[in-house]
Length: 77
Image 1 (cartoon, rainbow, N blue to C red):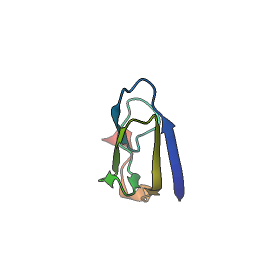
Image 2: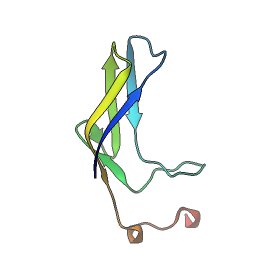
Image 3: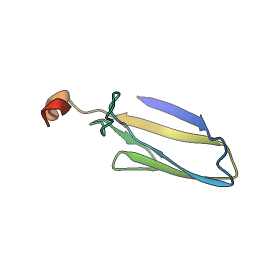
């Protein structure tokens, strides 16, 4: 699945670093087995440095999905 993700940063000053990854939906938040893949991503984490803008655009961002059989449920860890 391909998506174009955009976000707005408020009160960041002149520069910011935006870090995005997949986490579980309920607290406590854990890294999710699915991971993000794209130009500014490494090991499932996407990092983008922005300057003098309040709009961040991740282009060509993909979610790499894995089979649930590959990972045990979190409550069993």
